[in-house]
Image (cartoon, rainbow, N blue to C red):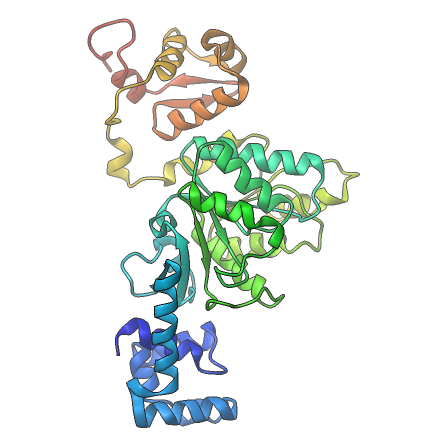
Length: 383
């Protein structure tokens, strides 16, 4: 029995959820050893059915019911185009693996490599205001253009707006589900889920195929959303919103937490205000997020390296406008002819590449940017 099958069999054991799974694996070293050496003290605490399952494994091992289910589930995943990643797989997402007792097993529809992209989670209320939905969509589009994948939970409201914004920005988006990846919930977002897959994104769950959406699944889903991401943005939420759970989990996982402020008269802004009071970063533009997270996108050696691609026409126009010194965003828009939304996306992209740096009210070229770009001359500018 290989490690993946043993992982699936141990998780299938009644009464063994992720927390108990990790207790066993940390004690015995791997899931197969945990199955072969059940501690009597734990076995006696489990339901009668679990005790029966464990005894059957002791007698039959690879031919037992647990192992048979795991093999059948693996076959169903192959038939459905679903990738399985367990915690010892080299492709298991690195940021999620750093969290305390991460999901032992992930089911993925779509491009599983996207789980290791730099991600920002955008979450908020299901019954968000028009402004809240517009903010979620706009921030997602701008951050996607800047190179971040956008992660959310495929729920109605802010989640769906964030996924759509990422797609509009030409980026990648990942949806973490509180159901099996073959059971899209809510049904209203089935078409959105297909759009996510068609545009190179992924649907993710730790639940077996066929698992329905249940209330108890969503806190588990939320910890995956925050665990995959470098930071979490709360766009709009009440004080009792489930999105606040995601934000608090992010803080526990040592992630950056951002919140968009709103009117003091808007109950949908109170969750954001509460987070800001307790340490979340107040943000007004996507540049606020990119500035804080941009330096975390690459290893130090990669951050110091010059870009490997030549500047395109739009980048060159922006650099030309900055060669005389710092410029405001309004001035840059006039100089380049870019729309405000497109300009912000371009500025974020070049800032993340270390070519520009923000100033109060504007931007200037970095030394690296000035060195790399050839502006009106045949060789790069000297440092």
